[in-house]
Image (cartoon, rainbow, N blue to C red; front, side, top):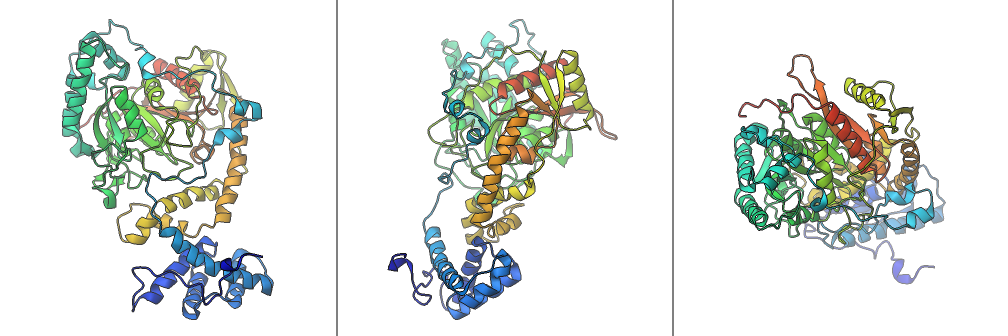
Amino acid sequence: MKPAEFEPSLADDALPPTANDRPGNATIVSRRRILATLGTLGLASSPLTRALAVQISEQGGVTREMIAQAEWIAGIELTDEQRDQLAKDLQKNLSDQAKLRAIACDADVPPSVVFRPDFFAEPDELQRMAPAKASAPTARNIVPRTSPATAFPASPVDIAFAGLQEQASWLAQGKLSSVELTELYLQRLERLDPELLCVVTLLREPALAQAQASDRRRQAGQSLGLLDGIPWVAKDLIAVPPWKTTWGAEPYQNQVRPNLATVAERLQSAGGVLLAKVSLGALAWGDIWFGGTTRNPWQPEQGSSGSSAGSAAAVAAGLATYAIGSETLGSIVSPCVRCRVSGLRPTYGRVSRYGCMPLAWSFDKLGPIARRVDDLPPIFAAIQGPDGRDPSVIDRPFDWPTTRSVTGMKIGIASANLTAAEQLALDWLLAQGAQKVELQLPQRFPLSAMTIMLTAEATTMFDDLLRDQPDADMGLWPESFRKGQYVSAVQYLRACRLRSLLVRETEQVLRTVDVLLGADDLSLTNLSGHPSLVVSLGTDEPPDQAARPAVIKLTGAMFQEATLLAVGQAVQSAIPPTPDRPKLAAQ
């Protein structure tokens, strides 16, 4: 038996009043709150749910008869005794829901359930408990790959499109100062942004101050390493106070977040020069934000895809050396493919999300975007690893540089229909002594149904916005947020359990190869937490359009970023992207 205080009568268990509970709209407010509660119970048929809400609000409580009318929704049949109990439970749930919402939760407060895909992927418990084998490298101890004899370009455009490694070499040799490089990029941002619409907040004065500090360190022989003095841009869900972090959405366009994001803090500590906060689709979906549609530099009449829209566009247009983007269900991979740049979506839990807008706590990932694959390792080395703030972050080594050769590697193929770029890359790898392995990713899981987890988590994150400002511009999200109100806990946790199986089976398949080439696996690998790398290479010549680089995607087993980067770097070096820059009107 439950204690008496947990068994209120239908008449006594009234809803707590709200600011809107005043004469003239009390019944409407009650019905809305009742509807929300019915959604949490999985009673999601709109006509019947509304009818049940009307009965509850008019009769002052839930009755056995109301439950009987709704049983077919859940596909169950109850006894009278069970109906009575469920009526009491539902009535109490109405009150409990109001109590939960009465306590404010800031965006930086994650749920206490932490997704750890490595737990399910590791087949051996001892291996799962084993400590990291080696400490991860930092940007300080990764040296430039370019030769000191590399010719310094006369053209500012050539400097802008040079790789991180080359720029770092020129800085170290005194051929270029960080102030000069920063000013070059600031001018390009100012000149080209009206065409691309990728800049949310330009940080001219702070960037020049950071560049001056970098030059002083270098002159004093105190360089912080490879990233010191190199300009970058941040997706505008990364908090960098005192400047705005708008999340790309109209309701937050003047928001200043209080805490410096770990990823920004680490790049700041490495000497990085932050040029600008750049666009993302509203609340991290698509390429449309409150400032317009961010454009693809290779085809400006086309959007850059999203949600790391500004990150990929800025890098592709030579407006920064590199960028940090984020992915929940394709938001690094998709814009990198569209904008023909290279980007790493790491294993879930590699990089702290602290200080970044949560969208779906068990999906969100941060990763670097650059024009060249060999520029990604030092950036990833600088940002990865635990910070004591994001409970999902995993302490695992990133062994770089790797001594592995593509010779003897197993290249997984999951589709008989490779793109021309994928076939070109495969042919080159096979010519180097790699081995082709045909495989099949798990097919038995209802991926679309399982992504209801993302919908539920995103709806939870923006529940207050939906309720307090239902008419606010939320981009593409309103329908999903409304749908998310009707996801039951049972449905969510069932998807969680299936996800555990999906992680294990996907890892078992990917461990049979070194990398997987191609495959339509965005939903699968974002659910499973596996890493992917987009590589620009070769030439794509679509009909009636100017030539541009082609792209491929590589996917690996968990924590195999070093292998992915080694393969991507080798292929890109052998088949460089051509042309290497877009033709913009204001170049």
